[in-house]
Length: 400
Length: 226
Image 1 (spheres, rainbow over the protein chains, first blue to last red):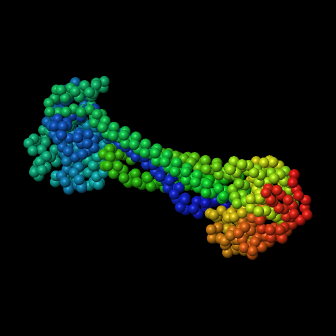
Image 2: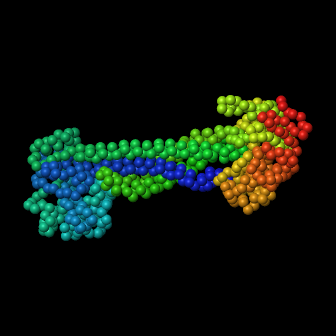
Image 3: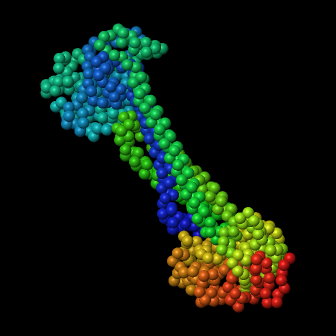
């Protein structure tokens, strides 16, 4: 018999009580850890989205801007295609304040070719690109050859394997890092390859482009404005002087997403605080009730020589063990849940979600751990104080 | 060890009215088995707790040899109780989460002095051999009382206090318990038991009677009221 074993023995021999208290602690840890990880994942998703933009202005066909949700297409990779005359890019270069332009081509894969769902195929000019390449470089630094593609992180295709797109064998030469957006399911390639794929679609009669030659069209133009020039002025100039196109400020495109994210983040923080407070109150109340039930037990311990300090220490030790077990279980289960269902969060909320890296996860785990380890003993502090001040004589003389 | 309580008294408030549980009393006990007899509510447990260092009196002092125990800090008094006093509370007094053996060893563990062998001796002497791994909820009243006695003896204390040690026990268990207390007294310990069972006087070296808070010594001893 070692006196240090007493808290463990007390907990083990009262399994129902102990498990309930551990569950409360686990609930508290799960709320704090899950909340911070989820909020961080969404923040990371938005950061990734912002990085993805690169350009100041995106120009698309006017009817595409009216008919489609550009934010979803350009930032979330929702499969869609639209085209405008290639000459638009030269017209844009002539607009005052435009520093760089780069065209992109969109195409949607036919069903059942490579993937279980349609995916967006994006053609970008490797020489002039300002929005895709800096981000692609993180995972692929070479140059794309004929019919070579780079696949998003969520596609099952491995590097070196080939995909058949509109009957054309395309070789995957790179795979992107996760962005936490729908672009993780997109395919990236050169304009030449996209044009080849458009021709192939025309030959198959799928005909994404019926009248024009693929050599004469582009889908969008990404624009970087000169330093010191007002981006809104440039966008207004484009909309005023060029017919049939629409210039959209990239920052305005993510405003909706950022607003939604802010609301959800606030909700998560509110929920996290509510759960934490509720769990702390329940734990405090439960410990207080249990302390009352154990008055006689503690009076008996006083008779054999437990000092008030040691009694208080015993209660705090029991609470610490409960909180330690609860925090560990809560954090572990939440980690498994959050990381397993990150994609589901993205799908259900329609917001970009990118799981935080391991270092941040460890920091959040430590924060949750510290929150529970501080709250538990604080919740039991009053009970510990009350029990340690128990009037042993009065309790023992009951029945005298 | 000599216990000398001088002018001790205790008042309580019940339903906003104060009443005196122990009238001012002087008591000196040194060795042997002392039994304090009294009806329920007579104040005998209060007196026992005051003598055991568990309940501070309103007036007076309690000295063990020359040490005034209520002048000690809580930590010092707790340590003193752990090393010099064995206490057998009335009723169920074992820690429910510990086995019989662990309950008996608890005071030794607290004092940091493992007494495994002595615990085995006590377990055998008190007929708890087959029950040492049992939990309190599996024991009868008599078995619980015997385990509490073993726990009170484990640190070889100088003084043993027993509060209604035979309450709810049958005649055989009552004889056994008082026999054990008597044996401890014969081994040089000071044993003080409070009980309403007048048959306890048969085992006692000294007998006191408590009535409405007033302590008197029986068998020709003079009444010791301050």
